[in-house]
Length: 137
Image (cartoon, rainbow, N blue to C red; front, side, top):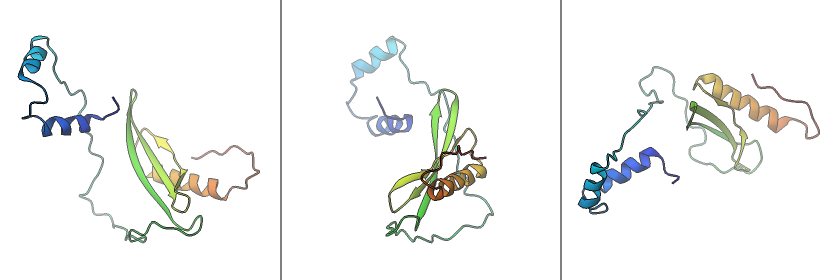
């Protein structure tokens, strides 16, 4: 239906004590062996308890850019697939509001962010007529 497991869980928690699902329907589900079974635990990917330096926010929430390549922003997201978790790092050019770097990996390591930056640099500054294949490693 397009919703994720966390969305379903939030909806269920918010409506647990309401009559959205009748008592008869809940009993019918139990009688027929219909249960909610979580197959995978939530995977924590953020380590806030570290001793690394925290970089200052240079943009200070000003995401406007008057020219291309003036301001870039990036993030890492994770996607569940049949083969397991995939991690996607993106770099955005804030002038065009377009993704200019997008490597994917089965591991969320710092090399993923570095590859996103390398990809963005090469694709933004590559001559338009170049037909050479690009390898990011």
